[in-house]
Length: 154
Image (cartoon, rainbow, N blue to C red; front, top):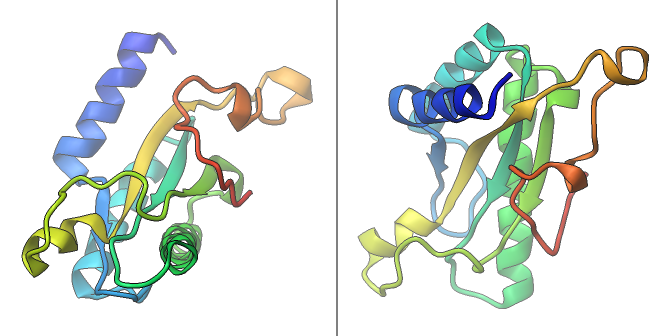
């Protein structure tokens, strides 16, 4: 798959399906909106089985940096598990946790801070099933599309 085609699919996913799931403060529980969002994501991913994804967990919660890191890990993991339950192959999904490192809204108002309590599904490169006798291609550490994190979960 050409880079341009990949970027087009990533943009389609973000604009037509939605790439974010939001959470309540200090929680990794999926609400109704989150479950609906993940159903749409899973359906799209099942229609595009050659693509991998990275689930990014984020936090902006009261508490220590280690507590924020832990809740961001739980958020990313609950999204991964839900996508797998809906039929997305587990070997297509990577998980990273950022804690408070990548805020999209830097503010103190509750509605504003809530934007940071999220998991983002990032479309990655196509899987290389021809390499290594039908296994995955290069590791996520080699993928230019995978955003780096100090804490990889898998």
